[in-house]
Image (spheres, rainbow, N blue to C red):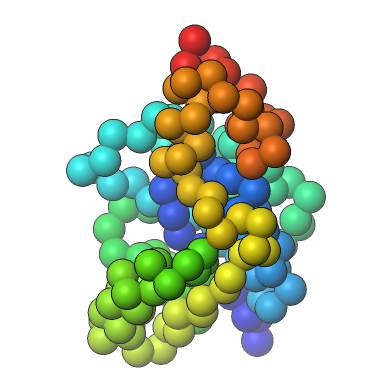
Amino acid sequence: MKRIAIYPGTFDPVTNGHIDIVRRAVELFDELWVTVAINPTKEPMFTTEQRVRLLEESLRSYPTVKIDKFSGLIVDHAREVGAKAIIRGLRAVSDFEYEFQMALMNRKLADEITTVFLMPNEKYTYLNSSLIRGLARFGADVNEFVPACVMDALKKSVN
């Protein structure tokens, strides 16, 4: 039986911290769905299609990774792709309370799906997409925090 997991997020944009979580998850699962969340209450910098494309380019060296998008409940999407686990990254203690609440609710909605928390390399613990977007808007070099394709997209987006 294939071990399938889903790693949801807005990925606006994908960072090296996200990629580090993917690297860890592919060691644990046979197939990993990296899934762009469509949240109508947020105004992302990049369109859903751009985020999917940036993920595809950033993760092409991982043959067991599939990229897609969803709106709605993540547990419903996990069931659609046959996932038995939801991957969530924990950077710091401040992430835990929110992620713990979400994991418990997802368990209540779909007891057959387990949330797996993974910690990125410590050099990425302070890194998040909002910070990257803010730095890029001010012209800061974020090259060491994102894949090259994301750096190029950020430059085009803020100019």
